[in-house]
Image (cartoon, rainbow, N blue to C red; front, side):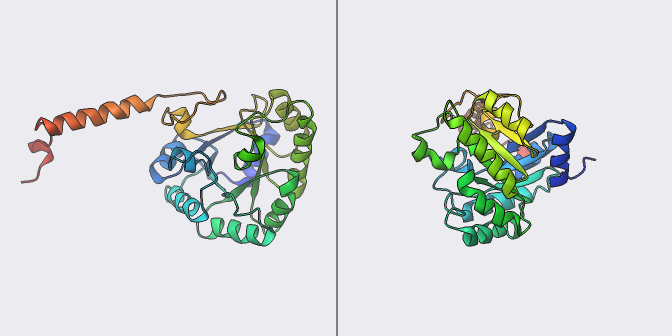
Length: 266
């Protein structure tokens, strides 16, 4: 039986050169399936706002919505480490709010770590939350909650931006983050950061040199039609399979083929 993944295990994986695997899940059935597949971490992402709730960005997602999703994932009792995204404005308003809301995610939601977006500008938050023994995963580069400042979902860290993102990486590590997501940055910059840091880097659109990789489960299964970023690899195309199953059900009900005696009680 697979053992429970913990923060020390994740840190040891970087030390040992073992690649870290991360996927998102937002509910009980997907958490069971993802965990059975052997991932090291399940990220309960605020990407739920896009792939589950249908918003155009992650910005509308609330604490209560995130708590709902985290609780559902934890009911699957995954062996993977469960990391919960902190939604927009749950931590940016100050360290007191950040500690309170991160505490709720652990105490009420059952998360085992939290993730916050931002580098140098959020180092004080990461430090405060880490100091009350809540593990924090940082997230730098393309940070979706900063979509308006960035003018869209654009690659970050090219040319003069590279030094700033490297400084962000050092800042979050110094503040106490146990790992950092590198999103939407050039592969060479991600490789440099990975070589420099003692904490694991988790890439998404950041090339192959990161210590681990994360993707959205709906993207790899072909269940999100809103967008298809370059960095996504589709491992299955379940959309047509689901549609075909529904069509067959509709046809059988309309034609009186379902339910049969086998699906009825006497």
